[in-house]
Amino acid sequence: MIIVLNFGGQYTHLIARRLRELGSCAEILPFNTPAAEIIKLKPRGIILSGSPSSVYDKHAPFPTEGIFNLDIPILGICYGQQLIAKLLGGEVKSGKLKEFGREKIMVSDKISLFKGCNKKEVVWFSHGDTVTKLPKGFKRIAKSKTCRVAAFVSNNNQIFGIQFHPEVTHTIHGLRILKNFIYNICKEKKSWRISDLRKRLITEIKSKVMKDPVLVGVSGGVDSFVTATLLKVVIGKKLYCIFVDNGLMRKNEPEEIGNIFKKMKFQNFMVVDAKKEFLDALKGITNPERKRRIIGHTFIRVFEKKAKELEKQAKIKFLAQGTIYPDRIESAQPSKNAAKIKSHHNITLPRKLKFQIIEPIQELYKDEVRRLGKELGLPNSIIGRHPFPGPGLAVRILGEITEERLNILREADYVFISELKKANLYDKIWQAFAVLLTLKTVGVMGDARTYEYIISLRAVTSKDGMTADWARIPSKVLEKISNRIVNEVKGVNRVVYDISQKPPATIEYE
Image: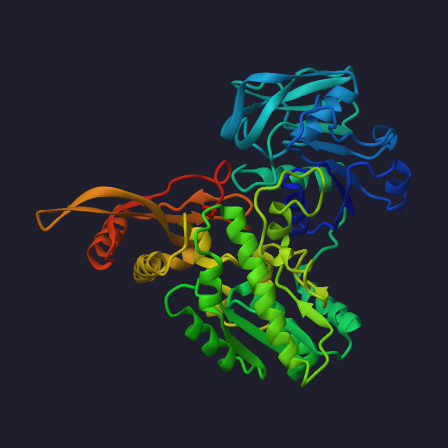
């Protein structure tokens, strides 16, 4: 295996995801795992992750002593590179010109880490600090215009440091660089296959729940659907699926979800109409985090009420959730050193519920969930559904949630998605949706002045949701979408298209 030491970077688990994609088993451990514990696992290599910290911060995370004396190849990524430099006698300073996003590096040594790469490579930077002096016994093997040491290696070809992120898809040959490290340098053997995942997860569920009844909250999204399908394979009619209609769904979505579960022959599928309860709870709330917390807490109350009704039929012990890796990462669950981006609906629930929580797919990324869904025989209409946040449209309305604003957003989003499908673009885009900006601007309709809302269209390409680029939708398609929204959706007089990348932006607005 390859061990990834977690220093709190948002991409730590994405590194492990990439290693799995390349066929290598990866184990994520805390940054301060003792060297003796690492040795027991007999890893072929070690990767030091990134971090939101600076190596000069008072409480910066540092590895334990002896990590560099294990005679195991090490790769430091971003913060990991800076750690290597500082701890081994080099220097790290705050860069005068910080680098965020795509940059070009010039590679001077293509023998080992950059084997098969070009002399000029497009990579993804996200750093302020930079290595200004190499430790003794190291040499530079890449640089950029503003980063003098974009990559280095020790003279014995055992310790490597790179300032960029090879794990994100925007580093063009990032997988090749990681592949060079794990197979050419670490001499790792392939040991991870997605085809083994279905059998393993079903076995794990059986060992935990036995034949006890399980509740699962479903939203119609691929994550909760795959979770429910795995459980259905194990316990059949002892699975109770609850869909809470919170009034924050897209147009016609509650009806569509019910039809899908009926078609897939789930025996105990129940709908709870809680639209008024959620809308009342959100009245006057504008802060994004408060919205998420209120929705989470309201969901708990509604879910628990329904669960008590079900206790008359069966003694429920378990609650299953479709939590996946990105949910946990962005909510800073894996590491106390991670920077919290936003709380997620799923992982805020267990604190209040009395059930034992099971999260069968919590180690997977979205693309792996879809591949697992295919292994389970789910139709493409389920597997290919775009991600939809737990709090629903509440985090796509910037400001207070009202019934009027929800209706406006539903109609605008419906136009957007339907036109993407007509243009055969929906399946080529990772996620697309409309956002209601609760600012009003002046417009002219029928020679009359209007003062109405702005709709922002967001469409991104991605592989796993950890990084994303804006989708290049043809201008004629965007023009048609804009014209339809302005003409058909009452309350909107302006449409804009968001061309922000993640990072620095997130995919969702709140």
